[in-house]
Image 1: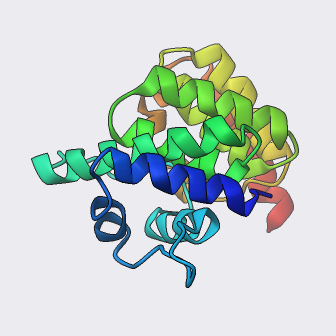
Image 2: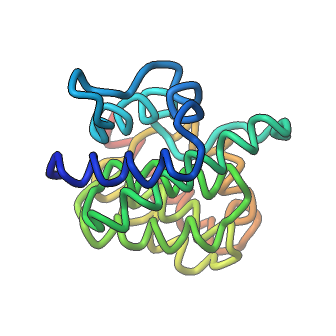
Length: 189
């Protein structure tokens, strides 16, 4: 839980940077509470609603404005995470944003932190596998993907087409994952 005083302090530093209009425009809504202080929970909820439920998406080239908005969002979330390093929702969005921006090593670091905070979450393990794949660490990606499948990840169709896992699907170790998926599909049927 983030104390209200942190939100107020962060708003002050955000305004000092001259970005007081950028965040509401970025989020598509006002993030000010009735008292005029920035509501961090509401802001993160708005940003999360704009993100997909999965880390990956079909990559498209970002426009200059989209890159600018993403950089503002990253800066905001980095501030939130500095103040509350265990704020999982903010960490997840930050990891997704790093990945969208092509900052895969930073996204991996965030995903590793989230995986330590939520080791039993299948989607967190899946996202970690994506980050490992994007950083050419296929052995670690296979381990994380196995954990995700063992924890209940079952979106096999997306797994087969996720662009973040493209390098992993080309790696010989991926045969192990395919065999695991086949056995899980038999159990489901």
